[in-house]
Amino acid sequence: MIYGIGIDIVHIPKFKKAVERWGNRFKNRIFTQNELLYCEKRRFSEQHLAVRFAAKEAFLKALGERKRFSEIEVANNSDGKPCIKISDCKLQTSLTLSHDGEYCIAQVILETEKEAAEGVNQQAIL
Image 1 (cartoon, rainbow, N blue to C red):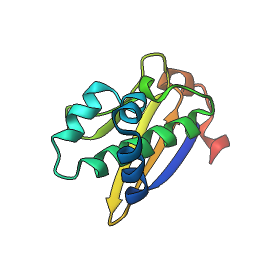
Image 2: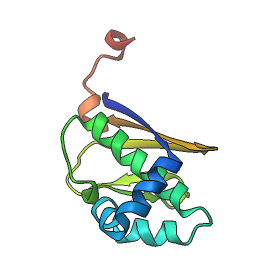
Image 3: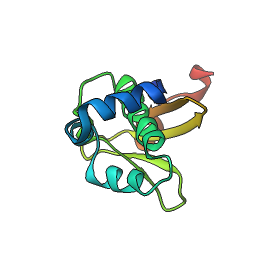
């Protein structure tokens, strides 16, 4: 059963200016070391950082409560698909990332665990 949906869009040049202005202080407050290492290896590192920032914003919107950005990690699963890693969240997460030109976007869908949703009458939902 869907718990929450979040979406966020980031203007990459504006994000890049924030990174240039605040430097490592900004990056270390927002991103985990794993995220920074992953993005710094990429050709357009600001684009990869920006879409991860959008993913964290989308996750927080779907969750509906505050968490520190550094508690949320955007990674890739064994299939290469993007995923959210957060230690104290019992919700299943679905994450979609996209970037085109000067913009990137992320959408997060949070669902209750399958066991909790099994008791829901699907006919009542449809």
